[in-house]
Picture (spheres, helix red, strand yellow):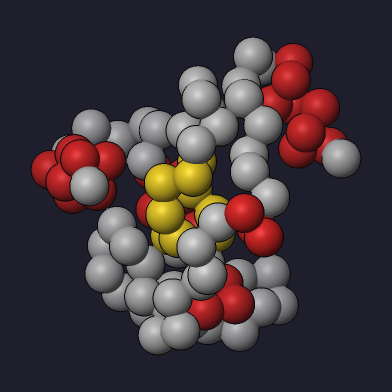
Length: 87
């Protein structure tokens, strides 16, 4: 609930529901950096630790990424991010 309120306050579109997105990759590989997602907040490394990336303007699902990449996508303008966003 806190994330939804923060998104609304910041003018971001709501993220889609996971059930409406493609399934998490079984191999647990981040779709941006192409590495197995490290464990995060008690979740196992790999598939369970992937975060749903979405466009903050439209709310459209973009992919399954590790937490490190999820933080970087909106803030870092590098080739890896450009390549990921272009797909």
